[in-house]
Length: 113
Length: 115
Image (cartoon, rainbow over all chains, first blue to last red; front, side):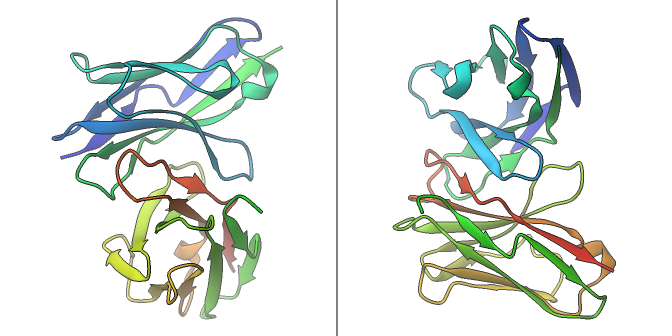
């Protein structure tokens, strides 16, 4: 069975401080993993993806994520938060059997000036 | 345009009315997905097309929901006899191949409100 758990429904950080959004997954197969961001009244935008290449993945807007198979985790990080990072973030897993994408319940990031 | 386009952006329907939501995927993308996103929730899978073939419709909540993609490009999600619980944002996404390593590209969604 496949599932995604986002450990925090809300995260609040001060502008300029690091961001950590946590994601754990379970998958019977070697998965692909993604992080998406959703700003209010917008669709989801791809931040980054892991597809069995390098375990440390760099994405847009300074975000990174590290795939740790032993911990079944794919946490999203950014060294320094910007006000424009305030949004909803979704972790997504897709098993290598193809056409299914499983979404976490989302983490709402607030950035305090 | 280079992205996924959905129309209308907003739709208000009276309970019992039928609605049709349109999705224009990225040109050349083989796979197309529909998701339903309730307020404050993550997207929930509805259905999936590979070209014109609907390969998975296991997420459609009832037989009032119907989706088609007759020429393998534009897709329409139809909801018959709308109910208040159908109120949500309906997201369309396309993928170049539909394989697990090919990411989804989302439109901005259609916000459906049933009164």
